[in-house]
Length: 163
Image (tube, rainbow, N blue to C red; front, side, top):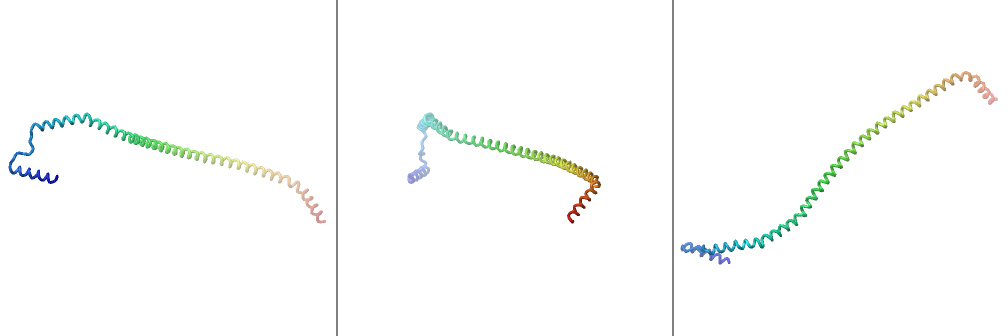
């Protein structure tokens, strides 16, 4: 094959030097072959190429449809995840706000109960002090009258024990 190409090249060079007519002749067969080529292309495009292209397109669509569905599902999943995270963050913020409000309410209630308990304790202490003061005053009034009888009773007992 290689030798044939070299031989052809040599023949072309020799013919170019001798000024002989060209190896390629243009005549009516060129138009005949071009017509046959175009007729064959038209026939093959109708019978072979278009059906094959339709099969290739159907195969590509069958291959792309699951990928498209997967991409759409992934996009929906991403949206659902984003929505879930947003709702979760809102719920956490609401919970924190409610917890803070309840803590403030509980602290206020505790202060209120402590103030009320202190007030009751102060009232009980004041009542006990008044009662003690009344008892003290009553004993102070009663004691001088009973002092003589108590002294006699004490002396009798002390003497009765000694004697």
